[in-house]
Image (cartoon, rainbow, N blue to C red; front, side, top):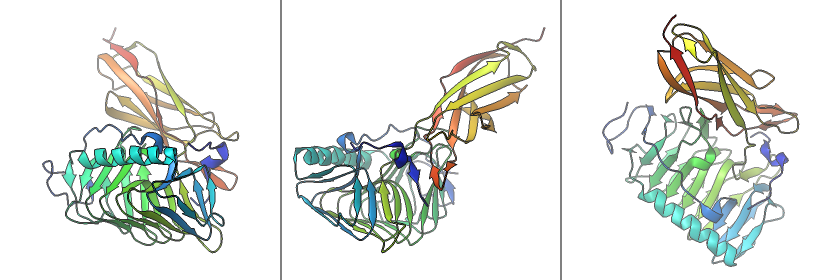
Amino acid sequence: MANLSPRSWLSVGLTGVLAMGLLTASTWSADARQEPIDLGDGFGVAVLAALAVNNEELTRITGDVAVSPGGVVTGFPPGVVLGRIYRGNGQAAQIRGDVRSAYQEAQGRAANGVIPAQLGGRTLGPGVYSSRSGAFVIDGTLKLDAKGDPDAVFIFQTDTTLNTAEVSNIDVLNGAQEDNIIWAVGNTASLGTLSTFRGNILARNGVVVDEGVQMVGRAMSLDTSVSIAGTGATPRTLISVPNRPPTSTALGSSPNPSRLREPVTFTAVVDGDVNGVKPGGEVIFKDGATVIGSALLDDAGIARFTTDELTRGVHLMSAVYLDEGSAVNEAWVYWQPSQSPVIEHQVLNRR
């Protein structure tokens, strides 16, 4: 796995129907809890191919590059790899084997919904989505909404192709993380010029990354090659494994126990640091699985939420930090979302 420094965290410029029924509205959620797909030794790999990885012009890859059983890697330089390169050796074979297993698992998951091929303009919640009768296409912006769950998993299955249009975009919302977004593609994948892509492409056949693409995730071809078109000048085409700086969230409540209709303040403290910069953004407060409020972090990394609407009994409370990014000089830090340990808050009868 690549040994990534804190600098690599700075990226420049960077309702439903029955299961397996057709989803046609602009906002959908499969709403089924999924376990993450384990990439094994492929976790630290940004680009994987069976035969060759070919690059032209200016590209920056943050993460490892592996080729097996072939061993061809061309175009570096002028491309730059911030990681190791494995050519046709035992480690490359292990990586490809692990990623193939991940692909098979992703394709084997039971889909919660079959969706139209065009994903642009939609907002999707966690779950497994299938488009086995046609290609996936992203023209416009696809939004993936984790709904406050940093461990939310998104899996997209197609037996054919994945294509993104020029200047298309994938946004991750409310705790969604690129490591948990899997594109299991039965044929080829192509990312259009100047598009922004998030997630991990596990394709049987070729992967093409066009000029100016900004990819946070992994480009992986199990049986053929990966072709990358760099730019003639900066900014470069970028492919980076997800490497958000870690955060931790702690939660307290006061007073605890409280009385019925008595105001209770929940205080969340979010820790993290990159070059002296602390996390910023929103914290949501949950009673069990229900979000009851939210607040923004102050400069000290503290968010407070007060309510007098808790019912009598014991409440299992948690806080979730949702990254919105922080500016660091001329770059941008995207933080890893985090959830606090659950605390028990007791509400008693009135005196």
